[in-house]
Length: 521
Image 1 (cartoon, rainbow, N blue to C red):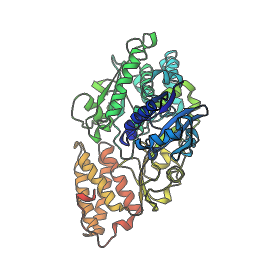
Image 2: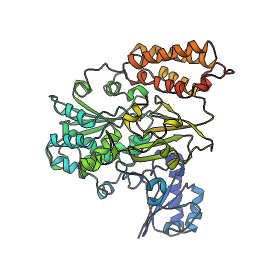
Image 3: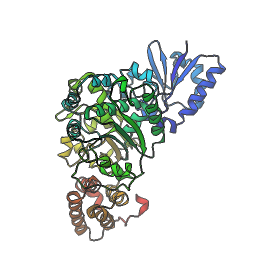
Image 4: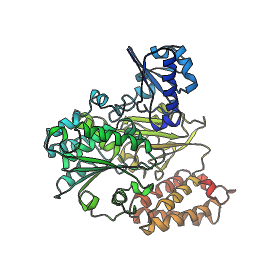
């Protein structure tokens, strides 16, 4: 009987040489006369161990990592394909503490299955939610999603069911489902991992959304820097269409839903939902004024559901297992789970799906193991490049949308970037202003001009030029951007700047600082 050996095809694993590892395994097995079958799965999310390979044994899957192609002969010598011991052995995959302590709902299949195997997807509860949705009234689908407490996982945290309800009840001859997969925040990779590791979950979630609101066309707007995700999604869409899960007659019903991938424009601001719509329509990605809301006047002027990858990929399990199952995870108004992504100066970077309520300290130490440098953690930026820098006094705050909002911070897309005690928060704050100046669409004055002036003021502060007056001016400028910007691009830029000023004032008081330049960014 052929022995399955799992080698991830996730971008992170590919970057670490997993293709070469897979080829070497096949060559070595053939030379030794062994019957093995290499399965290209997604990543389990233990990114410091990539490529992490697994072997199916009678006692479950055994993991080894990180594996280099030069390790393959030694692994075969140790009979790793039969679960033999080796210095790279990590034991049973499910018993690895980093994985065992998680609650994998949305990511239940990622790293477990072949992402382009419909048989694998079906064997792991795939399309159960779609079958349930096909037998339900559209209003009932919307009600289940609403009762589950699912909120937008892209950062805004708007209740998904309310958005669907609005689109459902807006009369139109055409409606759309748009998945915002323009994952541009620093330290984030959950969308990419899901699209590369379990594309059928996203396809199923978007199809359920279409049934709920009466849409017949969907678009997945994928970040241009994700060629592997685009490749896998296009293959998965073709397979789903050929098998009848999308298309003119979904599973033999009269329901219709067509789906296609649109490559993003390479602009950070196109992650803002209205700029994304402009880009899909073939226009320059500039933010639209709201109202009207996209749920009423969206893509091509029609009612449009816009959700993030994780939001839509969470829908199938909600329909399959019910609203109560999902909302029993989490706390307060933050229900379900979120895939937190640990990056930066951290020993064990990767993806951790946990229910809301876990603390930042637990993520940093219980999962991350502290810094990669071995130095103390100084600041943690949560929520992307426009998220706040949080000091240790805030690390015991539960990961909860409202709790973070009370700190003038944001959970965002779940990205967590770690900095040790060598970090200069004044320079990092300057980077936020510079980032905004570069990425602004330019439509509104507070963002377009404010960020440019912000860089100039930051340079004077760092260079100790009339520092007290410049700090006062910076705070005033942040207030204008916060309250006057058209979208979150300018409106959130003050978060990292003010949090750095408030929590790390010493970094703004250095007497020997010189005016910074581009080499600091």
